[in-house]
Amino acid sequence: MSKINRNWPKLPISDRIAFMRQAVNKQKATPSPIPHPYADLAALDTLVADAETVDGQITALETQLSSLRAARNTKTDAAMAEFDLDAMHVEADTKGDAAGEIAAGFAVVGASPTPAIVKPVNLSLSMGSNDSSVDWHSHPVHGAIGMETSTTATPTDAASWVSHGTVSQSSGTITGLTSGIRTYVRIRAIFPTGPGPWSDLASQMVP
Image 1 (tube, rainbow, N blue to C red):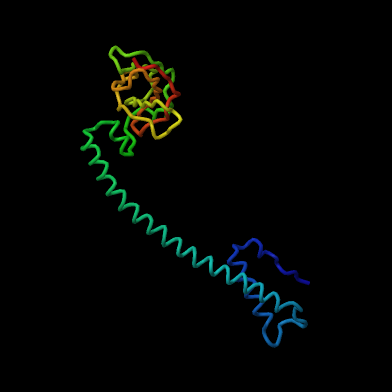
Image 2 (cartoon, rainbow, N blue to C red):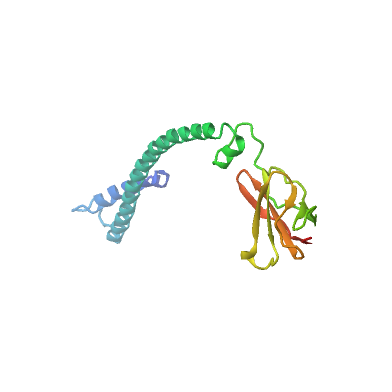
């Protein structure tokens, strides 16, 4: 007596479904090829049909996905060709300045790793040499291309802060302040990619 070879679990899933469909269709024939048709053949037929429907949907989606991948490759190649022209323009417009190229979103050959975006520390203040001025000094920030200063007499009022511009070193003098008023100062480092966080506050009575 022979045994059915139950090797269908080893088939790819679409081939599994096709194999079941072939067997079910043969068993649905009239007259039946076997003495007693399977009692739940109609239910099995429905299950196989459901699997066929989903398998067909997947095949259609895979075809669509393959087409989309090909379109993505074509469009990306076109964009990269134009992007290369943009890179050439940035190189020429910045005259090869690494900071400008990085600020424009590019990596630079041989450039140091992007510095950590940190806030300045050890901000200290002293009376300026002239009236209405305050001298400031902080620990240098690695990778910074400048330092911006900002002052206020009311630090809890976010709208009251006034920027005093950017200097290239980690010390400077803030002028044009109001004498006899305690002024609060904060600073932040400017990196090629933009400004970092503000420092802790320091205060000084303006002479």
